[in-house]
Amino acid sequence: MMKPALSIAAFAPILLLASFAQGQTPAQAIELQRQGKFAEAAQAWRAVIARDPKDAEALASLGVVLSKEQKYTEAASAYRKALTLNPKLPGIELNLGLAEFKQGRFEAAIQAFRAVLAADPGNQQALMLLGLSYYGAKSFTEAVKYLEPAAKSDPDNVELHRVLAQSCLSAKKYSCALDEFRQILQKDPDSAAAHILAGEALDGLQRTPEAIAEFQAAATASPGDPSVHFGLGYLYWKSHQYDEAKGKFEKVLSLDPHHPQALTYLGDIEMKKANLDDALALLRKAVGEKHDMRLAYIDIGAVLIQRKHYPEAVAAFRRAVELDPAQPDAHYRLGRAYQAMGKAAESKEELAKVRELHEKSDESLVLKMSASPPPPAQQ
Image 1: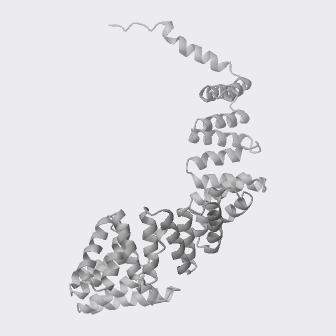
Image 2: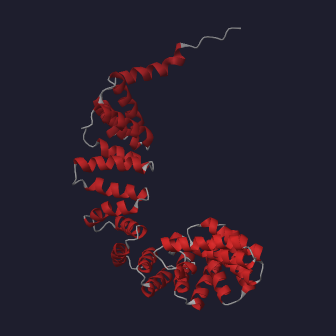
Image 3: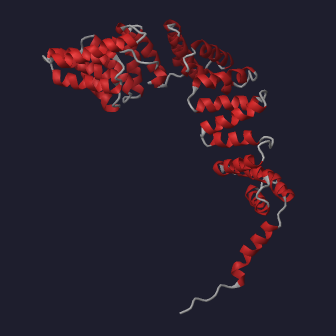
């Protein structure tokens, strides 16, 4: 049985749309764009481009409309085609960079913004966006290079200064970070986040008492935040103020009973106080919550060595080595465990690695053996 033919009426909307598109002019497309009718404007620009595929300005305008619709992948494609046709089209590289940035394609954004600055070194918007793109790409040293002058030219942009401060901190430029955080705190003295980050910068400068003061201020500003109490506890722990540290880690666990770092450091304190049962329970809970707690595995091994449970201790130390083979402390303890088991060859191999790693390190073996963690924000 033959299907009935579709009526002309069924095609009417399609024919009307085609007729509408064919008659579009750049002026009409611009008017639709001005009215905020971006879908219609995009359709109009596509009609213009269909008549003249080499119209670079129409392609660039299509990119603008697509960006307004948050269709950044299509917008970037339109901008690239326009650039191919006319590399000197004003503003095109900047728009391309923005479209790539908003997709999180930071490397592509960097390339575009660098091109803008090469042509116009005084372009402050491109300077800031290039710095933000490097920040997004986690190239923090490069981010600082561009964010610093951008922030100086915009002293009231607190968010920009915050990103610069965080970039300085991540790049281990602690003096730069501290200067920025202090400026932020002048504008917002009750900012717990700024106090925390200033404390981390001071810790990086080995100014631990001042870092503790900043974390105390953060704890006052945000008493219900577990990360604040953990950071303060870590600084007390690092300063060997174990009673104060214990109180803070217990505070963290009252707010978040599953906090793996607090469990680890509290377990470490109990081990140092020879409370081995409590230590082992806390440390095992920590690695149950998070499987990459290196210090917890080292301490578990240390407790098991004291109990002469050598195979289990070896397993814990080997896990610590897997998590970071470049740290000599786990190799050292593993070597001693093998030695206690009478495995001379394995012990010799591990202790040789300790000497090799110590020679490559700028830090003393004593510091490495302490298993000191990085600052809290890097946990």
